[in-house]
Length: 357
Image 1: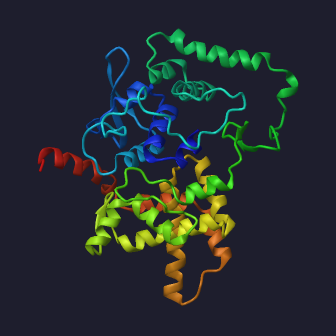
Image 2: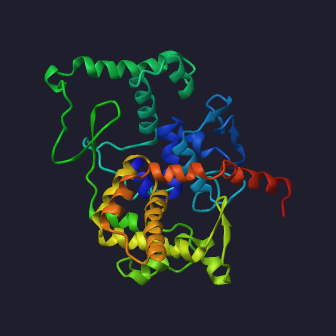
Image 3: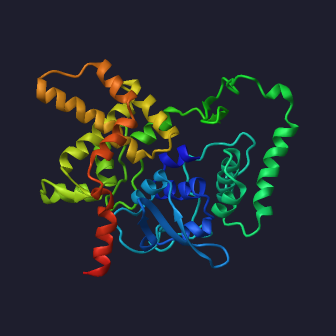
C-alpha cells in the first residue's frame, strides 16, 4: 500500500504514511494541523488530539516526515490534509482517489484501519513490548492491544508445519515476492508498464494550467505536465528569475525542470532499464514519486557534470553503479548539507506566523 501511495499524489502518500508507519487513526490524521508540527531533541513531531480528548506529541518516522513536508508544500498554517474545496479533508465526503490501489488476493477492501492494524501487528511481530505498542496505538485498555497479538499467535499456531520451511522460499513465482527484514516472504503486486509511465509523469494536483488534450506519450506534452506539477518553478521561469528559494535551498528552475524531464523520458522509454529497476526498489523502500525523481536526477546531474567537465559521456557501467548506490548516496548528500537547512522550513513558518503579511 505504501508503494501504491508513493505513486499517487503527495497528500495520499502522507496520509497512508501516518496510518501505516505511525499507527494514527484516520480521524487523528485528518484532524492534524500544520501549526502542530514541531522538532524536539532532533525528532520531527506532530501534536494530535487522540480519542477521548487526550493531546499527545507523536514522533514521526523519517519517511512520514518527508511525506508530510511534500504534502503541505509551502503552506504555513491550516490543516495538513485538504480536500477539493481547500478545507479540511473529510473522508466521509471525499471520493476514493487512490488510482494505484493494489488488489488484495482475498478481494477485501483495504481501509484506514487495515493500515493501523498492520502497524500494531508489525510492532508486536518485531518484539516491541506490549506496553509500548499500547501507548503507540493509544489503547486505553491493554486487552485491546492483546487482541491483535492473540490473533497473530493463533494464526501461527494453527498453520500447518509444512507451511513453515526452514529456509525462506518465494511464496509464488507468478507474483513479485519481497523478502522482508524479518526474513519472511511477502507479496508485492508485479508492477506494470502503466505503473512505470505513471511514475514517469505523476498526475499534477491543483494545477492552474489547462491540461486538456495533453498526452504524456509526447515529449513536449510531458514537459507541460511536469511544469504543471511544479507551479513555483513555472512561475519563476515565466518571471525570468534565475534562482528561487524552495524547500530550504536555492535552485535553478531551468535546470531543475530539465532534470525532471530527463528522468521522465528515461522512465517513459524504459531506457536504460536500470532506471525503472532502481525506481521500483526505492518504492519498496518507502520513498515517494517526487523523492525518487530527485534521486534519479542526482545520477543525471552526475552524468551532465562529467560530460561538461571532461568532454565525454559517462559510461553505462558508471551509471549502473551510481543507481545501485541509491538511496544511500542521496541520503548522504542530504546529511552533508548543514543541519540548519532541515530546520529552515519550520523556521519560515514560525516567522510568517509572527509577522503575517
